[in-house]
Amino acid sequence: MSMPFYVPPEQLIKDRADFARKNIARGRPVIVLSYDGGIAFVAENPSRALHKISEIYDRIAFAAVGRYNEFENLRVAGVRYADLRGYSYDRQDVTARGLANAYAQTLGTVFTTESKPMEVEIVVAEIGHDPSSDQIYRLTYDGSVGDENGFVAMGGQAEQITTGLQEHWRVGMSLAEALTLAVEQLSRDAAGGASRNLTAAQLEVAILDRGRPRRAFRRLAGQLLERLLAPEDPTTDAPASDDPRPGRHDTLSDGAADS
Image (tube, rainbow, N blue to C red; front, side, top):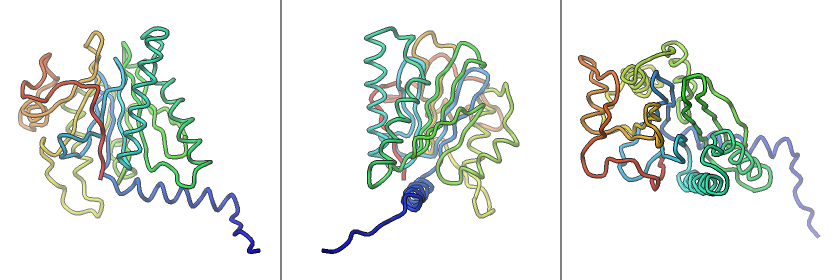
């Protein structure tokens, strides 16, 4: 009878972590950062149908990088968790902290018990009534949870982007300033070459708007996003009305995509 191969637990965990990190780093990055009126989400994503950024509940949003089918399942599970808890108890009982804990249990269980870890990193963010009560949680493939302050970057070139955000992000930035900073970091060449020119059509942008009374999630696209990113005359904040073009509206059914 042949003997099964023995793999030390330390080596098994290391191999799983290396596998997940390598595949997550292949995806285009996502930046989440606070501004004076809320929290902004910016990703390089030319797809208009498959999204990396989505609404979970009234004042909670979700962003992800990695394998699409895996974090789409997590997004759907998060919507179901939020709807069930809000219906069973109260809408105020649905929090980003509770959702992050539920995601951490799922990711941690898969990482330790399954043969392949989930190739995803996600951010769960909740807008508060003031900047001090905003919450941004980053969850990695092994279920680790980080409480981020101000900004976070995931996916390819995340370390380089984080360094740039540490140098240039500041408290109280306007929406236009925050989006411009995020796009500048996404445009940088990892090899040190000339920066790319990312247009509004190549970006997926959404915000949690503190000024909205209930559903804070908004997608920004089209002419509105172009005005916010215009260097000569940027709009200081998003107007009350959304982009009027068909399909540009808030939705709970959006997925997320990566490459």
